[in-house]
Amino acid sequence: MRQFGKLTRRLFIKGGIWSTALFFWNLFRGLTKAEATDSFSGTDFVGKTREGKHRSFYINFWKPMRRINGKTWTLKISGLCESPTTFTLTDLKNLPAQSQSSRLKCVECWSARAEWRGFSIKELEKVIRPHASARGVVFHCGDEYKEYLSREALTQDRVLLVHSMNGKLLSDAHGFPLRLIAPSKYGYKNPKAILEMEYVAEQQSGTWSKIGPYSPDGTILPGGDHPLEYDKQPRRISGGEIPY
Ligand SMILES: Nc1nc2c(c(=O)[nH]1)N[C@H]1C(S)=C(S)[C@@H](COP(=O)(O)O)O[C@H]1N2
Ligand SMILES: [Mo]
Image (cartoon, rainbow, N blue to C red; front, side, top):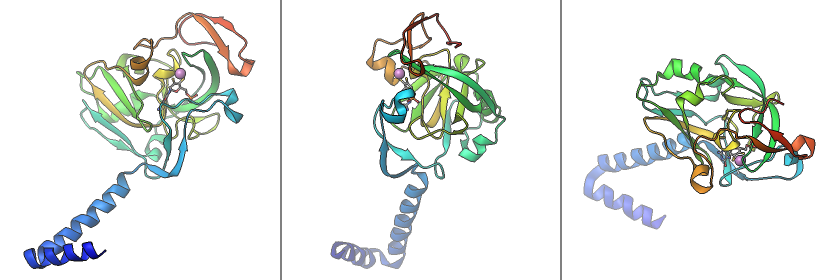
């Protein structure tokens, strides 16, 4: 505090009352701005879990993440579009909604089914109007996870940006307040806790395909599945969305 007093006095002597006032004004603006742009709340974290109530639907997180505050969170749209827009959760819940039951399949073999509710990316694109040069979208998430999907993949039927799961708002663990559901692709192409969607001209590799032997495209391949709600009893699946 003594240091702060000295600094104020020096500012005042050197620059007079106006530069002192300007200094405090900028300090005040800096503080309020930091508060308004922070999407996170509290000090508690969500992270990877396979226990308790999550035994029937595992939780994956790249890094433990502070919970997102739905009141200050916004979805930022950036990059190659005509009207980059920032949406609040209320804005997104007011878009024409769609529900679907679909299975999420992790490339590590487990899978689980839920009822999702959200909207098609086409509804967002009516507002933000992507440039013709925008080939795909990079999703930036709260846990610093990053994933890329082509616009071609994102505009398929049954690909939704969802805010609700099994009749309730998404839980923090499953990616509150917004996640992507792309049922024909492995879980790693279904980013959760989305903060920003960046429209880009070129394909980029996401977090998962950089660290593992996983395809950048992420389409589910024919092979094995261990559904959690059937006690992980192994079964065979053909490629693409698992219909049962
Ligand atoms: N932000 C973020 N989204 C993510 C991940 C992640 O680590 N961080 N993991 C992905 C993977 S590998 C899977 S299998 C699914 C799991 O979704 P769930 O945790 O809701 O079960 O989330 C995907 N989305
Ligand atoms: Mo996964």
